[in-house]
Length: 209
Length: 410
Image: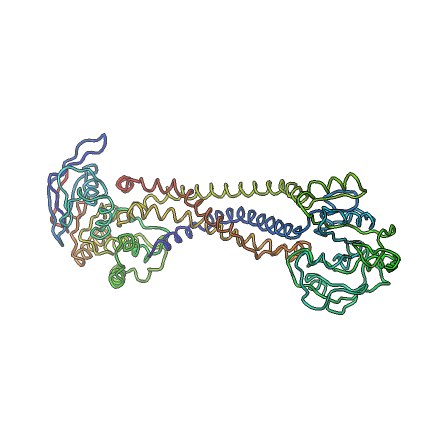
């Protein structure tokens, strides 16, 4: 699903960053470990097509990202990728349910009614589905963000520090949720983090320096 | 989920802001709409009322007053002119037709006009019921008069001197309604027609029938003798035989007779240029309102975009193309301005409707709130463009947003 080889990237006016090679198959899980400033987020954004202009090769679902035009990248993101961030940024103007359904509309995918209901059920959001997102708890917001990331049944899930701000109990809960959901939709799960607690759960890791 | 739900949700999330912006624009548009409705209808009415009359001849005085009095029937006469002078003028070779009018009385604010039936026929007036007046003190009334004063066929009434209500009552003579005109949307809807002789008799002027064996009958009022120096009328409405009339007649009349000639076309143009100043001031005010609302909408979109940078970045990660984002923002601007414009148009029609319903003078002038002009489509299209314009800069900014930078900036 993800193949990274000989990738380097240079911000304008910054140093050249080199990234280790790795690959991730369908349903596999991998940690991208490293301290702040080691380039975890940069690599994650490169794989997500949010940053362009890398050297080397990044393939997602067999497609070399460099060869895609901007709109093709948008479509790839919408259909094949799901993103989870440390800040579970939700669209404040919308309800829980609308935030999840937003993914289908923006990704240009038909709303899979059954899948969405199932997700809300699994993530215990059904009761809150019509609540505005500014009236739900942090934990619920995190679950909405996860539901939104997998609403379109992506083949890869890219998570950026999903647990760093959480205590042990919640950290454990969120990582389990992510893994379960990834497993359910058979997606490859790539987590960029400096949170070493996750090593106890996911054995595969790549260290960035 | 679709774009309308999203845009609507964003607008709903800032209800006061949305309301203020819509209302500001609506007020500006409403002012323009009220102006448009009044001036257009007034212009139309004035044009249709002055149609077929090239020149009005009355007693010396203000030419504008002569026009206001004798064509629109909203002012007092400048005085009377001798019948024999009018007869002489009517025989002029440049004159095609000449219609004498004798004014003086009214019934509850509606003017009674002594005239031959050629005058209402100038406006293609047809009878809805009854017949034209034949004998003295028989009247034919306009449709508005019948409706507003509840007059029916065969009703009797007495006239009052002057045009306003509460003038001296001429109680000794009773008028009888013998005909009611069809509504025509012109000034004749507000008039009461009778013979010139009736008007004279109400004012106690002796009217001796002409003895055609000894005297020649008047060419204007055939029942009396020509050259009768005791008889007077208020005015003479003239149609030229040729364009030469316009060149020669007014000057001839003003220089060689005791009468005054006034051209409806010229005087109404003058009237509009006087009113135009007020209209310009109001239009400028409306323009300022619209400008402020546009500015306010721009600022609102610009500010909300700052708050929404992260929203937009997230939407991009969910697969939204740049164009979808841009389109969402443009649509938000368009939504605000078009809603404002629609509300403004409605408000404009409503205000004119309410004013027309509560002020009788406005109603008399035939102005209504439920007249629609193609200009309203232009206003709607213009507001759409305005919305696009207001949203353009925020949309361009959204287009240029670097998602990676926004997402990494936490």
